[in-house]
Length: 403
Ligand code: ADP
Ligand code: MG
Image 1 (cartoon, protein in one colour):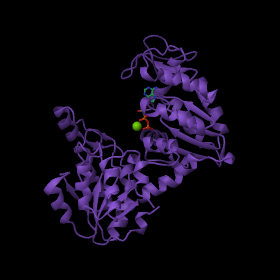
Image 2 (cartoon, rainbow, N blue to C red):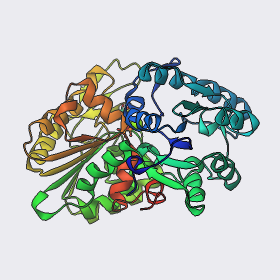
Image 3 (cartoon, rainbow, N blue to C red):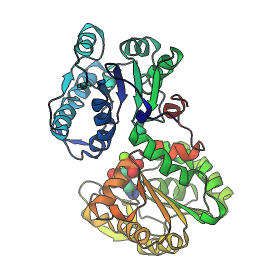
Image 4 (tube, rainbow, N blue to C red):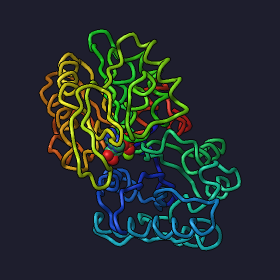
């Protein structure tokens, strides 16, 4: 695959799709990992004398409700990223508040060789998420070359991840992957196709997003020897199997699927057998541990219980390859960290095992508990890493770059 290393782009306008979708808290960047991870590609293009135009989405923008749209735009203004990026690069970079039209065009054409500009949030444009051909065409018209370095967005065929490179390639212009995507692809290969010698292959799935991830389980069942399910997804499974889940969140329309999936897995899906539960999510006043996987009325599951932790450890110990996406409990709250810490510890004790984490919150959890160095690879993309496994190593935003 062509990488940024191979590009000859002196004096050319190079669009770089980055993943600057950083977590924000009260307008401040909570974790700048994703910005730091983009630096090698940016620095290389600066040294090559390109005119570097960076683009990324940040958060979600609701284009249906005009009032909400304005609020979302205010909240997800990319200017904070430009500021942080300037600090990290040790030089001021240009920020262009426009995402289309004359203002953007002028900003791009005024760039000097070796200088960097960041464009406002791509999702300010309604057409971005729809891969709108007109939008892609306009963006592509300003670019001489394109570099894909947003691994976390490579599973989405949007205008900035798919539309632009598709057009540029058809015009015979250079397209390539960046250093971050190259590193991710090389690491994730090891959890996509797992040879006999590298088995058992154990996957741990947790987190909050159920509907996003539940479909992936079907494909993971073909690839993994064991799937340990924790986090919010576990309640949809346990409810589907006839257990009480109290006030825990679950997906009504996935119950049939969950039941069916569990039965077909024939013991390869491991569900929580006990839970740490609380009476309220935001202000828990009563916390208890259940005897089994039934949760009493008025309580919700917040973490896996001690018997489940033991079960997890037993399975993790057998692994030769391991993939983990999603914390198994609400690890941000001190009372519900135990499950996720247990998984961290068990993984850290493995020797000669390829251990890979995918997911922003999972990565944050591992960092918070001091286990970052214990894993072979921590991916910057949650959804993207899961889909890459699901699709046998293919992602639209990477495939479109070509050889
Ligand atoms: P990732 O970013 O690693 O892919 P997700 O975004 O899917 O993971 O989910 C992370 C969130 O899941 C965390 O904020 C965590 O608090 C939440 N979570 C984990 N377990 C539960 C649970 N039992 N109930 C509700 N939320 C949970
Ligand atoms: Mg997340």
